Each structure stands twice: as structure tokens, then as C-alpha cells.
Amino acid sequence: MSNKDKTAKIQQIDVKVEKASNAANTSKKINLLDFTSEKLKDFLVERGEKAFRATQLIKWIHQSCVDDFNKMTNVSKALRSNLQETTEIRAPEVILDQASADGTHKWLLKLEDGNCIETVFIPEKGRGTLCVSSQVGCALDCTFCSTARQGFSRNLTVGEIIGQVWIAKRSLQPDANTDRVISNVVMMGMGEPLLNFDNVVDAMKIMLDDNAYGLSKRRVTLSTSGVVPALDRLRNEIDVSLALSLHASNDPLRDQLVPINKKYPIKVLLAACKRFMEGKASRERITIEYVMLDGINDSDQHARELAFTLRDIPSKVNLIPFNPFPETRYKRSPLKRINKFRDILTAAGLIVMTRKTRGEDIDAACGQLAGKINDRSRREQHFARIEQET
Ligand code: SAH
Picture: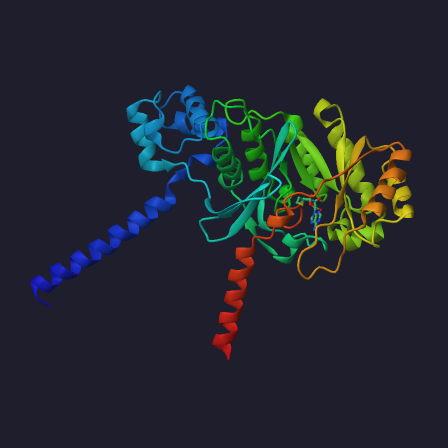
């Protein structure tokens, strides 16, 4: 090889290495959305910065929803350029933003690895509730839930969980000084939050942080199908409200509908809920979620049995009319049946509400979040494999 050729080859390699390291740099930038106030403080102090800078940054990021360091005018130029080099504020990418006729809003968000998740905003009189996902897919296999059909892919990072709140706030409330639009967050989107424990707890800490979203602990609700050991851990970690996806009045029925019941049956689960509520004002009552499935769990006998099961649990029962999805074997209970079921519970002294079904025209209703794009890409992969094999 001549010297000239050698030089050309070396240059080529250099270019490749530079390209590779650029790519590595962008993907390796630290995402500031992953940090709670405490963690951001530690991060900055380790780099020789003052702790109060963390408060300034948290306010810019979560109160003003700013992702451009140049706009953070009270932060020193030196720190800004330092942050610019090594960090970023990286939320998932919005690939679909749909508004329903009833004001419900749904975002389809694409994550860096190509997976998709969904987030829903439900406006009601005097409040606005954001329904946030905690995992890509779900491992729990509840038979009436469309997310379960998708299987489990992975846990969301803190940045991907709080990023949903960030995106929704930025879209619904572009001016940080206007009244708060998102007043409540429910961890009722895709996934089982207690199976992504650390990231969900950190994301909820940011929701409660006065310098970030400043939500009241009564207005941040974790919904679980009942992972008992994690529920016991949760009570020592953070003070939020709890919703329990009960859906059945006895174990054989719950074993069928919510298979994790085989591991943590109703008695064990309700005892854990009682422990969770002990001594906390924000945990006065637990929300019991009960999906109304025609001919499955909606008889008078089920209602009486449910009232008995909940007799010493301070609770409010939320009846959820089943939201159908393609290929489901279940049907929604007729309204008359739901009302009768409600009346039996009310007569037994329980507080009962029937959840209004919202956003049906955009598949945004409870249990309909399946990340359709995921399904499609999987199916495509599947077909591609079949084609290759044949
Ligand atoms: N894994 C958590 C949170 C996600 S589901 C949990 O189980 O609580 C949020 C709520 O929607 C749960 O109560 C769930 O049981 C309910 N749900 C799921 N599929 C549904 C459907 N098709 N119709 C109505 N509610 C559904």
C-alpha cells in the first residue's frame, strides 16, 4: 500500500470513529428528566456546583417546561454550557396527539428504542386527570385488559414516566403562569406500576415536588392489581393515594380475571391495603376498582359478596363499565345491571361511583391503551420471519 493510500485509509477510519463517538455522545447524554430534586442536587454538588442550582433547574424543567438551556436565564452561562455538553432534557417523541369530542386527549409517544406508549388526559369539572403509563406492555395478563395482549416489553425510565406529564403540561398549558390544567395524576395507563417500583416512586416524587408539578398527595394515585410485597415497601417510601384493581368478590373468580391473585389472594391483599392506610390522612380511603363484565362478575350475589369482603376496609368503590377491544370475549354489563349492582353496595353502606367512560372515539378509555403501533410492528416482524422461513 502506498503512503497516499495509507493516509486515505486512516482518514476513513478517523471519520468512522468520529461518527461513532458522536452517536455515542448523543445517546449517552444524561437525561435531566431522570432526576428527582435530591438526585439532581447530588449530581450538581459532585460537579462542584451549589445545591440551590438544582432548585433553579427543576423549576425551569418542570414548572416552565423548558428544554433549552439558553432560556434558563438565572443560571450562570458557565453552568449552562457545561450542562449543554453533557446533559439534555429528553422527553419521548409525540407521534400522535388526538383530541376526543368529549375533550379527552391522547398522546401516542415513541421511546428511543422504537417502543410506543400512551398517555391520556381527561378534563372534568374542576379538575384535569392525566393517566400515565409505567411500563411498555404488561406482564400481569389480566384477561379483560388490552395492554395484557401485548405482553411485557420493559420498564419505563423515570424520564419516560415524568416525560408524559411534562409533554401533557407543555401541550395543555403552554403558559406556565396560567391556572394549573393537570390537577390529578393516576398511574392507570399501561403497565403495573409496582413492578417498576423505583422509577415509579421517583417519578411520583417529582409530581409531588413543589418546585416541579406540586401536586397534592391526595391527587396522585397509584393503581395496582396487588403486588403485596411492593405495596408494603411503598408505604415507607412515599405518601400517595392508592387504587386497587379488585374486580372480583371471591378468589376463584379473581384467579381467572387477575391471575396475580393466585399468588396474593384477596385476604392477603386487603390486609396489605389496611397496613398501607394506617395513620395517613391522605390514605383515608382506598379506591376499589371493579370492572363490570356482563354475566361474569356483575350479579346481585357478587355485589353482596363484595360488600361483605369490603366490610372493614375504608374504601370507595369505582365501578368501571368494561371497555371492549377487538377479539375480547367479554361484554360490558348493561347500565341497568350496573345500577342495580351499585344500589346493593350503597345499601350495604359503601360509597360507590360509576366511572364515566371517556374518549371512546379515540380508544382512550380505561383498558384500551395498547400502543397500536407496537402491535403493528410486532406483527410485521412476525410476518417478516415467516416469509424468511418459507
Ligand atoms: N396495572 C394497574 C394499572 C393499569 S390498568 C392495575 O391493574 O391497577 C388501570 C385500570 O383499568 C385497572 O383497574 C384495570 O383493571 C382497568 N382496566 C383494564 N382493562 C379494562 C377494560 N377493558 N375496561 C375497563 N377497565 C379496564
